[in-house]
Image 1: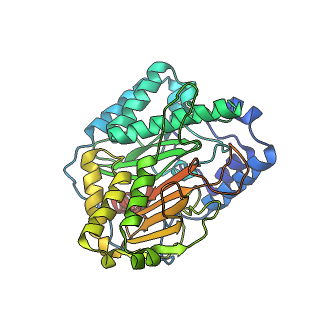
Image 2: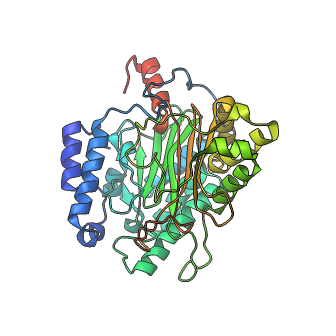
Image 3: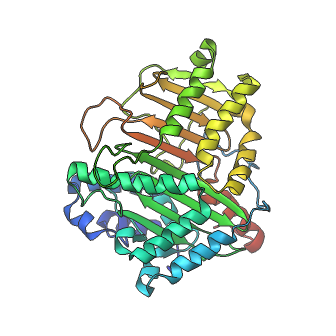
Length: 400
């Protein structure tokens, strides 16, 4: 395991040279132009130079939202699956996959396909090792969460078929990292990083923080090819639209923060860990009780990617702040329309966005065939960082 977090200088050098451990040789050799890759590296470099604060409404952290506590939901299956996955790797592979729990690797994820990666790629694994990786994911995710993850990876293969660019897209161009040592008591976690699918999964005792999570796809459906019939993110799309349509005309006007849908509206994607985003739209306290329950069901569609027990813990956290949860909308509000919506409270930020074509065209008009979704834990607890800070303060008298 690497013995220390990357320093700012070392991290800058690594990013600038494009020599991140575990990257795909074919991706680097034949991928997009060097100038584009260099622009992406510089963006990452600038973001990582900022100390982590987290998503805030005004640049200031709201204190006391999270605390280290027992949940009563066991994380033993996740620990055992992680140990089994590590045992199935070679010594060289373990050296690539292991990082300190406080490492900058957490923040180096990127939903775009161009970026260099750390960890170990699925394309570098045997079939048995891939099965162990999916067992690890399955131990922490719900059946829906695991299926959605695998389907996004499959649709990345569909994208490779459609573009004839297997050096840029593909089912196995996804990387796994383990932060810390899997433990029943000490902090650790895992990360999946790749095009359109990122999961950050932090564990402390029986607590779990699963964010940031990015899930998206272009296309959203395989019309032909190896994975014909695979489709993703339709529930997130349809439930958001259904909720918007359930609002009164006056409420819809309050929720609508802009009429014109832009090519892209998501704000909380890669390298926006310190996003400052004020609340906007329709406030939860202005909803009827049935509407409040409807909003929670939309939230549950995203939170429900976690195992049921930890998902319920997370939902209870969300419910406590329901009055201060805001729903915002941009774009059309009918079936087949293109739109953006977000759900934003002190403890959760969800974004859904119909994006313009990237790999399948250069039109600036957003389309239902390209979707991005993001889930974050505002006020300093993405990657479980606030829990980690509290753990270090209590157990070691210091912060990471």
